[in-house]
Image 1 (cartoon, rainbow, N blue to C red):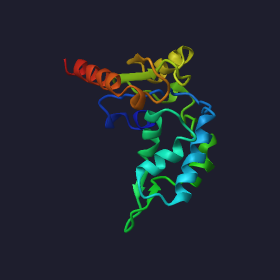
Image 2 (cartoon, rainbow, N blue to C red):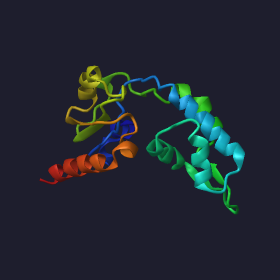
Image 3 (cartoon, rainbow, N blue to C red):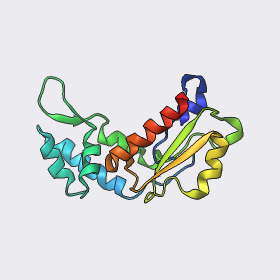
Length: 172
């Protein structure tokens, strides 16, 4: 969303996923995930199954654990996994991660087609922020999916269908 508002000419369309152009308080589970990631970082794991075993202590849902593990990369020259973004960097910035840099819709507007995909069991794109979305993104649509915040991981096929449908409609 920030790229679209700062440099709208770079985009032909925009698809935010379970995020809105407002400051949001991150759910408490994010701190729990950081604990799991720190444990992974300290364990010197060599297999993703080891990371999954660690994360399973912090998150029951396999889809969410798999999403979190997309941050794992091999340390160059070794077979040890590390996190793409160091846990300390995430931890020291977690209180700001839910902030949106634009506060005044009259100062920035993206007039391209925009599809907001939201999980109906998530609080990040509530109905009461739809008017604010419309001020920043006047050509927006909303597609609801029966899941929580981790839309792509929880309902990948429904997400894919929503995106493909939106893009096909743009071609017409």
